[in-house]
Image 1 (tube, helix red, strand yellow):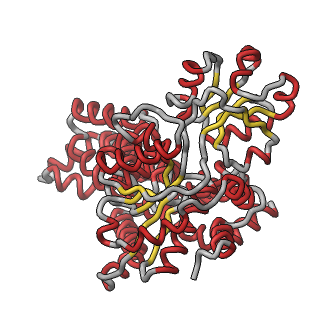
Image 2: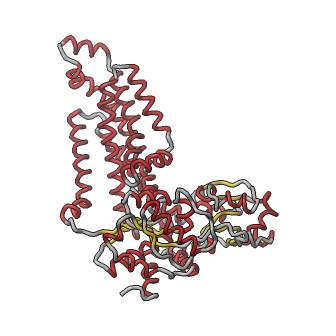
Image 3: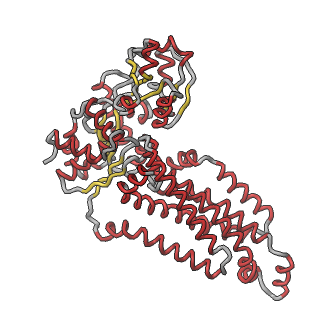
Length: 508
């Protein structure tokens, strides 16, 4: 409990921002779902066949896993708030539509006949007694959708839409239970409060409910004003948006980029740390939602290029191919790389390595029947990953796929004895692991460098010289140490980045 309170105090401003983002995306998706589902339900409730089909379709949409739905939406609408909103709206429609249809269909037929006898048309019956009588059931559907939306909205953090899920993803990545609890408890409390608020108006009159939702709309608009005002008042505001993948290392690098740019130019920088997985950032860069993110040469050649070139173990060759091919394919600029490489590697516990005399990957052939492996989904599906272990090392053993940070938790508890790692991961030292030598040269070089969106260097040519200050700098040992300071010692990525820049005289 003490650690949780301390984490909250340290990250209070980030928590407030995440809470606002979570409320914004949850309330906006809920309001849009109400606008869609309630009128649709009012229109089709007396048409039995149309009502059944609508409920079946909206129900099927709810069965699609949220991550799969987000993955399907990204190629169509990019990343960020828009795909998250679409996914949440699709999930929210079914309970509201079902509540509307059920509430209206449950009204006594004698009342409807009496209304007709008094000369009321369908709209008048709906307005004066059908809708007021059905409101408790409709609002109950809205409550169900609201709770579900608030819980599901935590996944928005995976595609750069922010919210309380940022604490959960960051906590999982850094094995920090306090961060996970901060995000999860905040989301749960928020869901309970919203549910209680809606319950209070469940039996209220129609006018009261309409006013309540009107207030909600005004509050939502007001919450967006602080972010919108600078754009309205300062049209010449040059802001560079820099994003990073999950983890301490990209967080450190983007803080270095920010400080260098703001130190050597008049540009302002907005950071989007822990933005998501490789494809999310790549799609965001191509759609100009972000301007820069740090990427690795081996990732470009093996994952981002539609026609991957022949693999090479020469770092200069891989970098040259990455730079030229990504320019040809997407017109993205790839600047000079840093010194260290963060390549894939295979690691086992020190005790397991010592007991079985494991020093290189080839040695695993002797203990295949003892292996309990866990890999990231990306590694498991790559030719320079598990597929390469099968083809190049003639290894074949069962494995589980899981989130990168969970691999370390599992091997630390003894549930696994072999995982894929990145060579500069701080958790290698923290979990007393041994990295096996890649004696067959499976893993290509992975040099990190800034990847820039199309046209950015034409707008701001000074960025090339500024960011190239890191070219040839940062050794693997230095990067691993900085990662350890953030992941284990609890230092902020901003502090660690600043210390490195100052120590190496890269700031004015």
